[in-house]
Length: 113
Image (cartoon, rainbow, N blue to C red; front, side):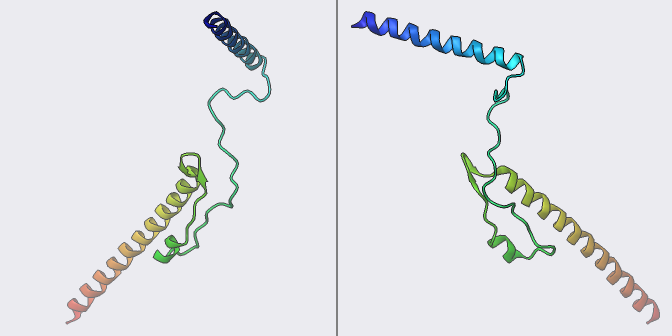
């Protein structure tokens, strides 16, 4: 019985090695369907996550990401974070501009008084 298992294991290892050589030859020849850099990103089954032009905190409560193999879809999360970064940068620039206008208005008011 143990002799049979050893022969079977050698046969399985030989078949795996033979299949590996065939795949590597196909890759060298430009074989179709061979993935060299790991797994491809799965095709999104949900529409992209979009934020409105003006983001309010309640918009974040309604965001739903697609679930992938190891959690949420990283491409969707990265997209939302990039959009939020842009919105926050614009909001910070507007706050800075308005603070400057307020300071200028107060300086003018104190100069007249």
